Image 1 (cartoon, rainbow, N blue to C red):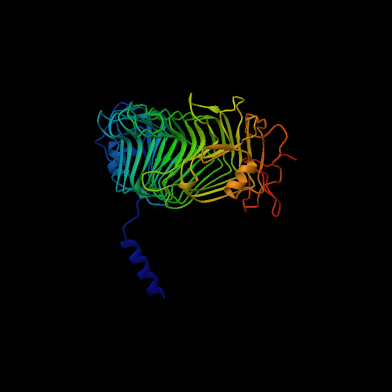
Image 2: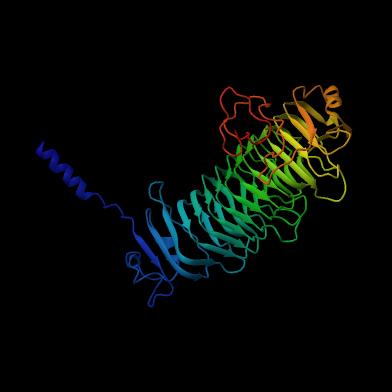
Length: 467
């Protein structure tokens, strides 16, 4: 046993020592800083590198690269990766701006993984502010990205990349573009505003998803696009699969707040306000579920259901509140829900209302029943301001709920009324005819997080009443 112990010690001594994680320093303001010094020298704040370029070559797993306040006029392109347990961190200390030369990408992350960029301002005038290709487990956190030449952050390929608590603002094209070969991208807690104001017709969305498994949650997405009807707050393209859009505040975009193509997908718990449309659903190979959202304001239509380039919509709308306060455009119908065509359409527990006293809109219009495949509807509350009580439109003609039932064979348990009054937060503040009138759908909580008691009937709309 003694001999075995001695051999074990000897073998241990022959093994190379593992690298220890280090703090590395970048500070162009320090006299005597040099990009020629070794990483061991840059471990002292007194002898830093002048720029992040050496760190991009020399940083090792677990290292933290502390970048001091200042503007660094170069592209950042890390070529070494961290590990899941020991990522490489590029940490801004104060006001740090990485400003790539005109025509260049600001930050290139190609073939690397487990890298974190934190508290940085990325400024570019090139194709992308930040470009990810074959990159995985990248975190871009608490940073600002502005690219006057193109996209803010573009993810070509890779998996499990995260953009969190960032400001994607004033990019010439999309704030975030997630491409077909990306998987599991997360955008959370960020502000996405003022993107896509380049005078071009397409590619100016706040967020564009073409990937699989994306999560967009807890963001404020506002004022994106300058091409009316074609650039959106969030645009999920026909290639997008398995995405979730949850808990966002979205408004004032040139097209829809959310355009949901592709699928399967879940759009839930969002507050959508005045844009051309609240939600557009089209081009769905699988069902998109839109549930417990508030769509409130002036729109051409609060919800538009139509056919895209490849296929018609396949959507189910559960427990949404749509208050269309008036038409955004000067002419035409302004129904809360306008159905051009659909392969599958299901309406359950929705409060759909046109509240402007001008009487120029209805709760739901199906323009042509011949263009709608499977259609089911029940336990909805339809409301508008039409004095003749025509809350709906069937084949383009205004009808009462009784006429709608006879024509559609649906909505036997639905209700209709003059438009109720809504508060600014989207709750009904007049008589609430939808209390406990919904169909049990197995959903746990409403838009505000109020628990729906097991075995009880939910309210119609996005909110449970307050007891």
